Length: 285
Image (tube, rainbow, N blue to C red; front, side, top):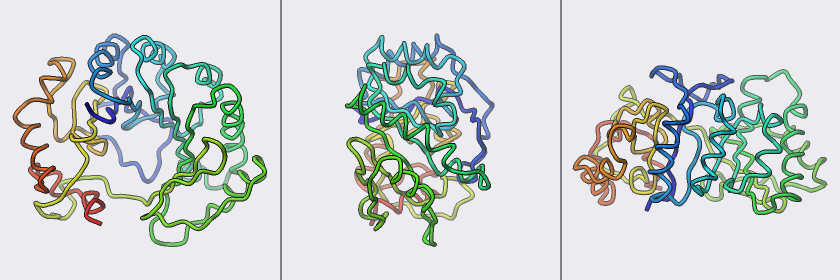
């Protein structure tokens, strides 16, 4: 049983953020037939399904049907979105029996529209949070600010808007390395993190020792069905197989996966990409 399986229903996004690298693989939207085949395989072995890798899930042309299939197979869904298309699906999301958590990547708006007022973007999200508190009080909502990079970060306009709309005061003492999540109202959280470098063979060699949650705790399934060991392998460079061509259970019990999993559990980075991944250093702290 894995904690999470990430399913990339599309690798196409409606924004172009500086912190998201360009996807090198072909643009792809997962079809409903393919998604149903994958969700059937995923639900028995995942505690939670995350509709995200690259791309914007709400931009999928058949997002409502995707949600219907998640409910049909009783998946527990976590959704990550930039929130731009929230109003289009707000009522359906609040009615969904499978939706457990929504993450809004707030840093995306500032990154794409630095000269626009944050209120026009943030107010619909906060309104959604208020409605969720009434209609779906078990829904967790994370407001992500993954823009801490060691220098001063100005999120004051975001804090001010939240404080005004929810009539609260935010404790702005933040230590990203210690506590990433801060509850501010009922099941509404601010979630902080620093920017990271995506794994690439172009990165410096980091060594052959280290630990990671990839393939132990979670895996990723790309829009074409390719299976990768972690949510940061954006182009499935470590391609473990394709779950539209072979059963996911067979892929996860293959020799390559077993060797990789055993290596990570024992602090050994078997795969070359892992040896060039700076994110691995976070787990040694």
